[in-house]
Figure 1 (cartoon, helix red, strand yellow):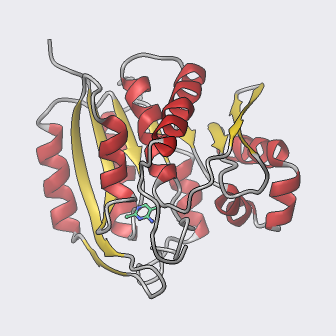
Figure 2 (cartoon, helix red, strand yellow):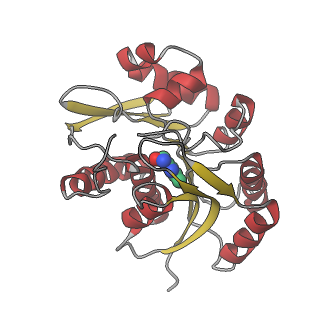
Length: 259
Ligand SMILES: Cc1ncc(CO)c(N)n1
């Protein structure tokens, strides 16, 4: 039997912590086929400015067409897009697949990374495009900063009332939201899932490590489970456990110089 197919939209990060490398680490070992549309190639040196080369519209389409030769995806996971062209390719794909195909789309709205923003140097997406894109998702996984930017509120407001912020996003987008607490403070790290009328919080001890790519890893670990038929709730819990275990084992690796 053909293994379910997970399609990634992702950028590369040459130290191998974030982006596509992190996605592949999270997906490793699952009985899946994994294809990818590489949206951009980035260098994100610690302590200096990042740089990036964007895939052209033609190359985005060619990668996508080839990826779809594996068959229709069982889940789509979206990380760094980097350009309006990549956002438009994704919107067109969603329309092309149609509502009949059960294919959850998980969007990690990468804007503020754990370190320098990879978005500098890339043509950043407007809030309007983000809203359009995110409303097509089945699950959106912002961190605290991304939620604050999307909602146009102070970060402190999201930090103090994360469940309220997550619900506001879910209601505006009419989708499920997993708000990640990783960029907060304190010994416990709490993620908040809004699934329709339900609200769930998952807390784990914080692993004190300066790294990148944890958001990519988590969203891919969720995508793997959704492609394999798990419920959203179970996928979020198990993916969080997988990330926690990986961090304790040093994956993604810590940044050795700076933050
Ligand atoms: C390429 C890439 N994707 C995602 C992130 C977010 O961690 C990053 N820093 N770089």
